Structure formats: C-alpha cells, structure tokens
Length: 282
Figure (cartoon, helix red, strand yellow):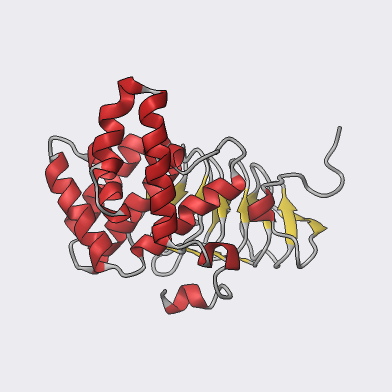
C-alpha cells in the first residue's frame, strides 16, 4: 500500500481481511463446476477460464486477455502481460479478492463470485487498471496507455494508469466512469455509473480528487480538482463537487453543499443508500 493511500484509511475491514484468496478461489471453482451443468452451451468458456487454471491470478489473467486482447496486442500476449503484473505484485490476489467480496456485499443482484468474475464490467475494468498501474510504475507507459485505451473501448470506463486505487472498491456498471491521473481512491469506496474524478481546467501537477475510505459516489457525481472527500461521506447523484467535503456528511447539488450529517458508524459505501437523509423531496 502506498503512503498516500495509507494516510486516507485505517486497516482493512475484518470481513474482507479474513476472506482468504484460497477460500474465494475454492468457492469460485465450485460455482464454475455447478455452472457447467446449469448452462452446457457456456461450458467451454467456464472450463477454459476457471477450471483449467491453477490459481486465481491465472484465471483472472486469462479472462482479462479474452476480453481485452485485440489486433494490436493478441490475447496470448495480453494474458502473459496480465499474469506478469499479478505475479509481480504480492498484493494483487488480495486486491482481487477484496474487490470480489465488495461486489457480493453491496450488489443485491450478485449471488455468487462467478458472475462478476465473468461478466461485470466494473470488476474487469478495475483489475485491468491494476495491470496498467503496474506497467506505469515499471516505466512501460506505452503498454500502460494501451491497456487504459482497451479498458475504455471495451468497458466504457477510463482510468488513468497513474491513479492510485485501494482495494475493496466497487465500480458498479462502470459505464461513463472517468478517473484522472493524480486521483487517489482509498479502500472500501463505491463508485456508480457516470462518476467523474477529474481536473478543474488545465492546471498541472496534483490536480485530481482524493477520496477517503468508505465514500459513496452516487450516479453521475462529478468531483473536480484537487479536493478531498472525507471518510464515510456520501456524494449525491449528479452533484458537482468543487471543494473539500467533510467526513461523514452528505453533499448534493450544483455546486454541492452539505445537506445532512451522517453518524460516524454509518457506512454509505456498504449500504449503497443514495438518499440525502432528509429533504429528499416527494
């Protein structure tokens, strides 16, 4: 974990810390075996993607390569690239597990690990970003930007490879999400569709938002500039945030203003409750 992320958050939540990679991998394989019987037409893909792989990292590299490989970088090369990134980062498996657990905890439509692993754009975009981020810090900017471009083309989600994103992050739907170069997103954040974490004009240097642990960024929220969103805050749908947001508050509007206070023990990123708390209208 980078120093910048560590300053934004306490240790990982117990529920995710206790979920071992081996346990999630075993459950994923069991779900895959059941799916072979449920849908024989898809059995070949499930077999090749999960059951023929020895580790979670290998399965994830295979799946990302299948979806992101193209004429410029074939699937086999993309698979090797992804696997190199995952094997070089000792926390890669933990990140993927916590991201999967976050989906299971927060998405009422998700009933098993298999579905986000195979199909959810947000999960795929986030794990592919981690490959691009590793490449960026290996001074391989060309390939990092290629992966970023493919993520944008395939998943409709544009994350700069230099951005720093923690684990246990849930990107729901992913469509229209933009995360800028100097953005920092801490652990346990939930990001819904059409959210922008962007700059505010043509300024250079550290110019993007810093999102603390447990924040909920609701549908269409825009956080612009080098502003800090405090721990456990809730950004209302379609809000435009141009200044710092205090911890444990709800902000809404254009420009965004505080509309309610949250208890310190509330967890908006986990509850996914987008209401303002009071004065929500009819």
